[in-house]
Image (tube, rainbow, N blue to C red; front, side):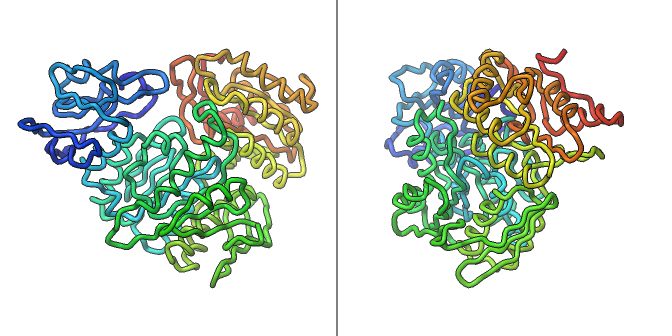
Length: 532
């Protein structure tokens, strides 16, 4: 469709070509086109990316409907149009299908010759910790000498190439996922770690990915603006595990393994969802978990602990901060050692090799006498874990700076503010992608949540709409041994006001503010519409 890609990076058109008839035979709708068999040069859902020979799939979106842009796609040379509505598409062949998103994924996979069937595909889903867990799995497999790629909400790693996957957190659309997988096959990779968001699963973006193994981190309060209920959100995550049984037979064998968090409330639901021939492995601190952790020590330098499972016990050291990473590491070990049969020592080496992840408990040190950390925490549970991690790393106060996104789950605004009022000493509420909502209105909702938990505005609670100003204000509050946590944006590279994305990086912003605070050279503070 035309208007949904405004905040996404543009993808180049593939040099591949396929006959339409070769693609249609993979669709469940049994479509035939006697006498019409053009050469197809690409698959897209965005009319602006249509080129001569493209197939355009009209996808209903949250804000606009791709069927509105069929005439644009035809004018640009689309040779076939797929959609769900009864419609006459003069100038191109129009095919009506039951599910346009499933059709988009199947056509894209067929166009690239089903690359997932030539790879061992590892899916990671959950509310918090997906990207970190995916990176741990990636590093373990590399330490084991396996040629592995990775697709996360941050980037796609294909050999030595790293490509940004977007400004904000979601799985890339199906044509891009399939293109990345095809590039991995062409590069000689054998395994891929694929982060599967709830949107990516519900919207069929990772359909036709033929998952071999799936891991869940946790399923908490998030994205109810889209899914409606927690149960629907959980069901979207569950699609990853239900799909394992249907994975095609692969040359390297079929693992069909579900790795479930025994400590999470989602365990019983997912446990019942996994059907033979798939099998399950559990992890956690629960005494019945197959993979367990103990002797956990957290310091400002990282974590040490022991992970034990059937036939192995590993002394783990990681530079990543926060005890919640114990579960992320257990999940990575479960997938690789218990699921794939990787040597345990490769897991130990791979975990130690991960220096850090942009925007995940990322310390910014400019020589100040307090901690300054950027973290992606944008859910109530993630914020709780980040604040608890900060508390464990310092004997001083915790100063939290965060916001809550507009046009997204409204309930978490209050919940996040309540968490901060409970766990942080000082709370600074600010902008985080207000979009077309009133920023003042969002901050009012958040302030009410904090005040419900006893916070007092002007004493331990402040509203500062400009994010750069809020960060500077928090640094001015800081005393020796305090910890300032700037949460919610993490690795993201933009912030949305109205319908415009403005360049923004919390790491750069915090570095700039610290440089000003210390009177040393540093980057310029990014500017937003709220900047003075």
